[in-house]
Image (cartoon, rainbow, N blue to C red; front, side, top):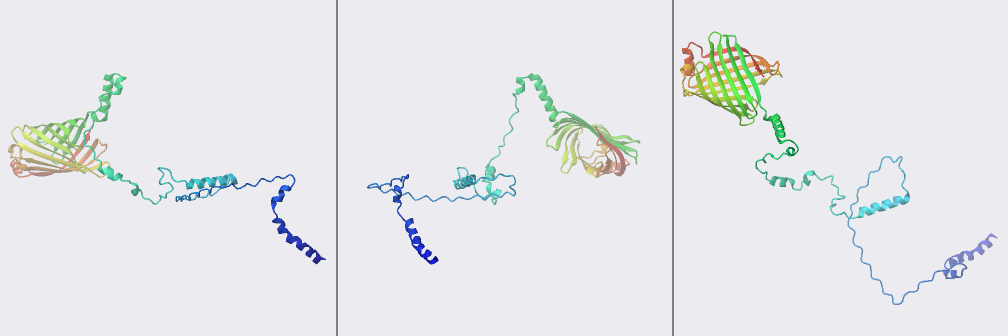
Length: 372
């Protein structure tokens, strides 16, 4: 029975492809269904021109993929349609050619050195000449004078000018006020200054003596001092000696600070007797601590001729070397102790011997350095 059923189904299997390939034109006879008319070919239709070949696309540098976020918790999922639109927009944006001024868009510049991006700035700056012209003159038309009294504003500007470096200051320095216990001697070296940064009045006084003989040397200098560099002044004026004999000198000298903070001063003196002298001094402050200072000093005297009455010989006349250790209780008040070595040379030594004195001596000194 089964065989008979299988044999009966064979024609059905063979007829199925034929039914599938049957013409659909007969569907127009189906009730309730209208088929569109088939388009008729036009007579003598001209062939369409061939489309031009597509231009080759420019090479597009793809941007590196953005790093994936480590966590997307709490983010809303993008719908599938929006995701496809976003990917299409990104692809279009990547394929667009760079605009003007964006020639470096998409380039990897991480390996470029900054020196290669100088674009000739060093050469341009080296070729520019710096003008060597004087500064412009100070302004004379002041805007404040339009709204306030001009005399009051001029006074205010003068006060500002004085408070910023143009004011006059005074200073009294007792560089040496010392006693020499060995022979009961004493000495002083003081200075008074008044003026501004450029122009000053300087009064100096120095001398020495003993309890037995009284004042042996005493002089006073009145000088005009003018700054010629930030570290040096030139000085000119008059020197008056009172002991051992009265003499008046024209004075021309300089005073300042050498590199490494050496305080130096020097001067030449022309007396009313036609005598020419020269003197040079120098000191240096060696700070052992913030308050304890060791100060070596030197003073040298020269003369153009012999002056027997003053015990001065021609050439190198005398040398004085000192070493003083002071302690600054305050910057303005510092007691000290030291040692001083003096020696006469040449004819000056002979003049001292004739007076019964020793041309060479070493003395211990104690004293005070103060200023206000």
